[in-house]
Image (cartoon, rainbow, N blue to C red):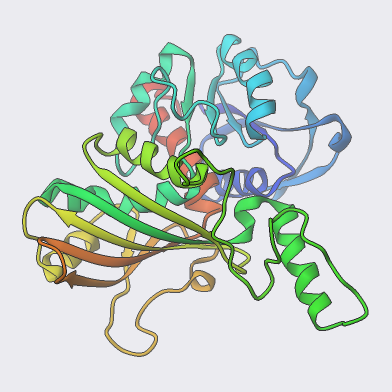
Length: 340
């Protein structure tokens, strides 16, 4: 016996990935519903070797459905997630709406799987921000060994993190640069993204940080340990898919780089590719379509006591969004629902 699963936002980048990953990982689905806005009604979506047509999210009755994966943004989630939860369907939400709600668990299954059991307060589980998800997968096993005091992270985030509009803008601007008769002004991003980097993701806050940077701070504390201090600088780069991060860590206890490498090699969801030679590391283009969070350039930081640095890369549409949501559903099934 399997589950009745709904995917809200099925026509978007993340929604399509959710459908793909449910099929790839052979999640026990008895019935699937692809939900979208009325303007996308009837659009065909792939689910394994099947094709499903989208239904109207606005009129969909969640009664009798087990799990709903939401990838529709905060405004739509605010309207429809409580409706699904009230009908008895457990919502796994990819937006930022519920991440900081103390009554909603924020889950990365390799890091805090036990937290899924807190879903019952609101019948909702939150999926973390894409940049946070891959970082905490790398941090948690090292934190268990040597206790992390402080993290300084600089991100290099792909345009797919801003949705289809972000990908289209990079594509259109790149073409325009090679065709002087056309010009594409920035719409989705604050400045030209083609052949450029932009140190600005989401809105600015009073202290000078951006909300994307604040998310990494708050979410790392909620998922891993509230005592960890985090300082982030988040940058949008002209890459279609795959987020990269330069992570500097200060520990309470000394941790040798070789031991750190061995720990990470044995850690769930992690793939270590760390050869000190040309090309002995992973770049974003190489991680596209993969489930793993890749870690390279692991080395001692001699400028601080008990310091390590590393390079972390992951497919943001997968581990940063759709894959993590499906993994939450899998964890929920094993620990709580126990069907399939």
